[in-house]
Each structure stands twice: as structure tokens, then as C-alpha cells.
Image 1 (cartoon, one colour):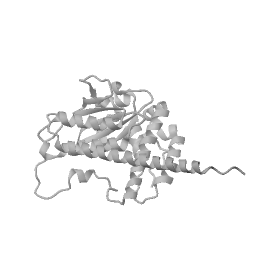
Image 2 (tube, helix red, strand yellow; image 1 turned 30 degrees about the horizontal axis):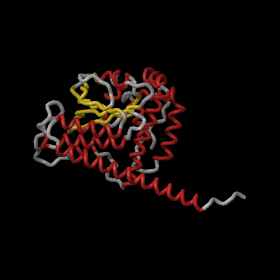
Image 3 (cartoon, helix red, strand yellow; image 1 turned 60 degrees about the horizontal axis):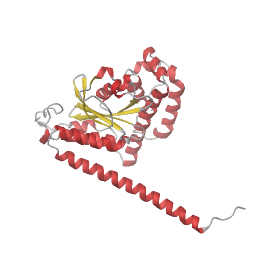
Image 4 (cartoon, one colour; image 1 turned 180 degrees about the horizontal axis):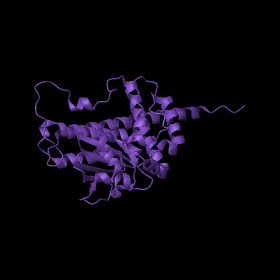
Length: 299
């Protein structure tokens, strides 16, 4: 039989576990404090330049690299960058950056490869993932926040983007933007559903545990599809060209579908976010390119 551990070792383990718990709690408190302060400053900003600076400060806290682009028709104009060497007058066409185009089309966050075809030549970086977040003003995507880096904290970045959107939509600041803001909608006689309410997902009013499962499912879908692009770029490209994604990547798709089924398809309200991500990100929104053998959405 092995020798019993000395009491000192038990005490060290208790101290270590307590220190870990304290560290995690301190990190949560610090993050909450940072985001709360950022929200306060968003509420008080006066000029467009202030708004841009706040977006970049917030993004810089949670991503190694970040950039902010305003949307002007079919063009993306650089408004700010953190730890990226970019030309001040950088301009990209949305049609040349598929991930940005997907954000504009879906008005949802997108995870993609940092390739020239997905994020443009200026932002491309071999072997990295990119995270793109829409910043809405009313029904329009007014700007897109780009972030990259393995340590990027996606939930916090998405919250920064949502704060920025809320700040834009405040009517008291609607006249302060030459490039970003839009005119407020005319008043209607009958009460109508607000744009913010329309953007809420169907599961927004579910209990917290169920909302969390939806959020985790959507994250799983984004990351899994991004990994497919990262590990099988040639296959994804071939599938887009030939319209037979399930034939080309059937093994990978079935593995992901089975994991998704077991982990997430346990709620009546659950949606097949993995299916949606495949179509939106790899196939550019064309579900016919899944191929005739594709079994369809999970239900």
C-alpha cells in the first residue's frame, strides 16, 4: 500500500484550490467592471470619433487584433484598428471579402478563416480564425467589428458590438454621425414592434438554462464550420464549385451532426445552427450546394 500523503500536502491543495477560485472570481469581477464602464462611456459619447474610440478600446481588451469598418454601400471603410498595421484609408469591396458579405447578408456574427478570400488581403493571416460582429443601426448594418487571435473572447466582443449598436440607436445622438448614423424612422400612428424586438431570437424569453444551451449550440456551429474551412480549405472550395458539400465532406459533417444531436437537440425549441452555418459560411447562402444526398436539418 502507498504511503499516506502528509497533512501539509492536503493543506497545500486546499490553498491552491482556494487561490484558483479566488482568481476566477476576480477575473469575472474585473470583466464585469470593464464592460460596465464601457457602457457608461457609450451612453455619454458626443462625437463620432468618440464612438469609434470606444469600440476599439472595448475590442482591444478582448482580442489580440481588432479593426472597425463602416459600411458604405458595397464598400467597407476602415475606421479604427488595434495591433494591426493597416493603411488609414483602407477600403475593401464587400464582394471581395466573403465573411464580411455574410455578416451583411445575415446580420449575425460570423466565424471564418483569415484568408484573403474571406476577410480581404489586408487582414489575411495564415492559420488564424477571424470573428466578425455586425453593429446595427436600426435595420441596417452600419459597421462591422473584426477580431482575430487565439485568445479572442468572443462573448465579450459580441457584447461590445451590441453596446456600440445600442449607442448608435439612441435618438439623442442620431444627428452626430456624418457617415454611420441613419435618420430616425417617422412616427407611426399604430404601435409597432421595434427593430430591437424583431432582432431578438425566438428563444430570447426562455429560461436562462435553455438560453445558454442555444448560445452554446450556435457557438459550436460557428467554431465547427470554421475548423472545417481551416482543415479542409480545398474540399470546401471544391464543394462550392460543384454543389456537393455532403459528398465531399460527408464524414466530417456526420460527425459534427451526431455531436450536435446529442449535445443540443434535447430542447423542443432547439434549431439546427450547424446546418445554418454550413449554408451561410461555406456555401454563401445557397443550400442547394449541400447536394442531393444531404439528409436535411436536424429536428
